[in-house]
Length: 136
Length: 136
Length: 136
Length: 136
Image 1 (cartoon, rainbow over the protein chains, first blue to last red):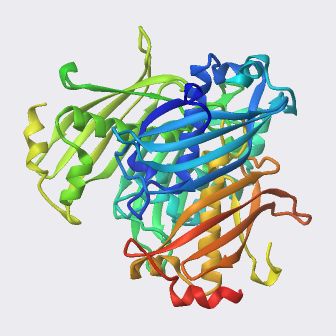
Image 2 (cartoon, chains in turn orange, yellow, green, red):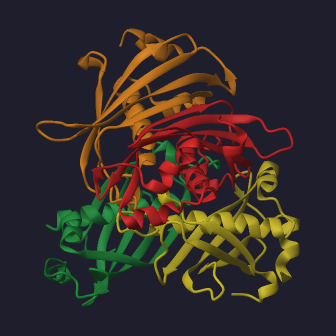
Image 3 (tube, each protein chain N blue to C red):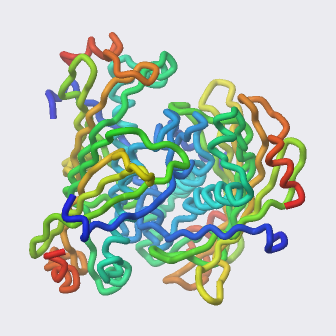
């Protein structure tokens, strides 16, 4: 993870709908968690993603990777620690760590998503407000 | 269910992602099944819903009801039997029956969805192609 | 809704994953919201549903109804107001109201779910802790 | 992809529930597709995953990677071409390619999932029926 000052921790509770017949959080539930955590990371840095979209921007996911370290279960209180690790003129990469929301957090998963910036459907430079976060 | 000639049977297999920690298909999985079955009912009646949408129409769900009769499990082969039971100038109601895809089908669930027709976001008459199905 | 003292308001933000190509929260997203809100209603009344399950209980959904009044959109801050409206020895019915989390809340949806109590897979009396809430 | 003889093509249609407000299939929809395709790959090779689970086995996903090449849209007919690329005594890796189900298929996405074998919750050797596919 990048330097802790730039990491935002997004709290969530595992919903029953997010579990599967193995009795655990389904592995497909983590990408929506990463996404919600990314939106909150942006908000914590002054960027409302819904507004970017209304202006015509879209940070399309072009790659996603998840490593499942230990299972999460229904009703577990978790944190998704999120950071921005790389930014180029037209793309950005976020990293994520899912940990238990406990006094001594244990890592349950980690991952990353790479995004390309689209403006009205065409590859474009990241909006100025995002580029200013390059040092974040 | 309406007269069998007008009923379309949509086959599906319960996905692992659609189960929950109780070991059964999650109750939230049925609305996407109804929706996929409704799209196929329309296709079987000559209407491609994706094309209606490209023309500006949208059949917004305004009510949904599901009765869960018996559980479905991962990998179960099911049929969603779908029919159109009511149509007015600006709305339509579909009914559904989820049954096992077996020689002697057992009903696992049933339900209905009521839809209002929108054209570019405004309530509007159902498109002509749909209204022609009134007797279907 | 029942008397306000017994209603728990569960806050959520609409996730991007919960939207659909119509640009709105998908109608299938509401049942997982109701479920998460129901779990928090129980917790607010001293019952941890995950513990009930570990004891062998399961409040299986046997009916669900949702009325969609006005659309919700990505990133909308919402409240799911939840109440228990009926309890019998082996079943319970919850009602829900989805409202905007604003100074002057607007109702976006409402619904109800009926549950039957299972103990190790068999229909059974609701656990004592739940039955004590009959007047709640 | 491995040699074509060992690749199974799983057909699907993009459901409305699998799209998002960008008007495309949501990036989180692909892992459930990979999973359904993997189950069918196993079935095509004589293994019913649901039976393996009843025996106590579970192929837990420990890593997932997806590369999104071009967008999929509601109602698109797709194929998920699936292959087994690596097998060790206790783990296996599957690869996937999502292509249009057309005369001249275009690749929309590709990915892989790595699995560890659990037997009653403990890391274990893959079941004999799976190990026999090592050459597949």
